[in-house]
Amino acid sequence: MIISSWNVRGFNDPLKLPEALDFIKINNINVIGFVETRVKEKNFISYSKKYFSHYNSTSNHSSQYNGKIWCVWNPSTVDVTIEATAAQYVHCHIKHYASGATFSATFVYEFNDGNLRSDVERIGPNPPAIRDIQDFNECILNSGLNYLPSTGCEFTWTNKQGVHDRVWAKLDRVLVNLCWTTMFPNTSAVIKPPGISDHSPIVVTVFQDIKLPRRFSFLNCWSKHESYPAIVQQAWFSNVQGRPMFQLFTKLKGVKNSLSFLHKHHYTNLTDRIAAVKAQLLSCQYDLQHCPNSEDLINLEAELVNKFRTLKSAELIFLKQTAKIKHIELNDNSTKYFHARVKERKAQQIIGEIVDKNGCLQSGLQKVGKAFVDYYTGLLGTDLPVMHIDPQVIKQGSIIQQQDRAFLTAPVHNEEIRKIVFTMDHDKSPRPDGFSAGFFQSSWSVVELNLCNVVKSFFSSGKMAK
Image 1: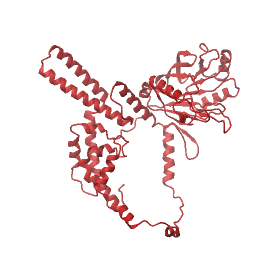
Image 2: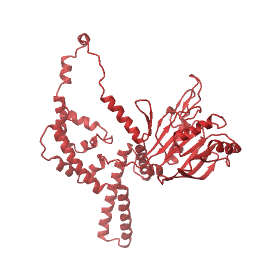
Image 3: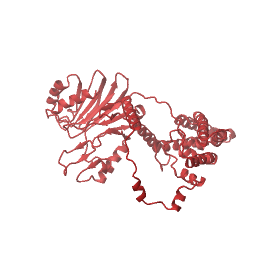
Image 4: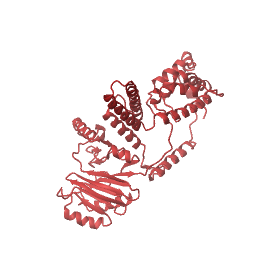
């Protein structure tokens, strides 16, 4: 499913309508919103029949005399129902025949050329006012919208003036709400070059659900569970023979299996678990109103309150780690914000288009993935000529003093390793094996010996196992 929006700045230019039609065909657009068309209603009807005879179209002429917004769609692939029109927007309901997906989209005409999210979104004379940026960001936040990350062109508008008077700005963007990111997490936005227009078209592709294999990733909330220390110790103190790196790898593998079991039984579907415990708690408290001296109900209430607090705390830790946001207290609003940030971060992982090593544009997840693999396969598998070291340069260079050499080659101590481990952010993304700094920090008393042996073994031998 492919949706597009393009601020064309006037369709009376005889070159722009044919270019718009070519753009729809080349990019296989299902629905497109043309903004700031500046065409009278009678011309809209004439142009639609001439250029978009195989498409359905509508406009907001009923709300704006020169119809600043057109909505054009392919009736063989989608069904579009116009829900509302106004002078500055057209809101429609879209059903995609092939996938059966239904959703809403709104094409909005810009309210102000100064609507930027930060001062880096504009290059040129007359920098934007900070107050305008704050107002626009507050508007987006209060509307419950999130910016859909995009690839392609960085700026979406330019005045196309000379070098000294040229202005670049990011005025066009795609905003989605939490409902959208939940239903369509695999969405990408690509900003295309503007062509003869001064605004760039934006192409939004909604991919079908991509089911990737689940990857183990250490969650910091696991370390708060009462059985966590015993789980790590039991898996860690197994008898493993071999080099220090092999021992560490094998023990991490054992811990991974045990922690996956812990997650399955205590942390899956946290939101549903919290809702169920809260419902039980409220029911128990209602019963206490009728039997205020019931020891069983009092004990049950205390147990449920403790369980509810534990689960809510685990949810906050999980969301902070996943959304990479700190210093926000737990409440309903921040929980919604965290969920939105998690979805937004997942959306950032989708790359809809990329230029491959041959300079060709590749679209779609499979072709984009192949372009990445081909590029790095060629890069890492190529022998490049290098210059030989000139011995005269080495002789003429400075020589490290003896005391400095002794310092650089001195053995690494456990305390040095511990300090490095505990300076790492425990919410940072995990290593390729799924373990983050949070695991080693929370289990330091157990893993210290093996981890330090691995580090010291590397520095003494200079070798690292695959």
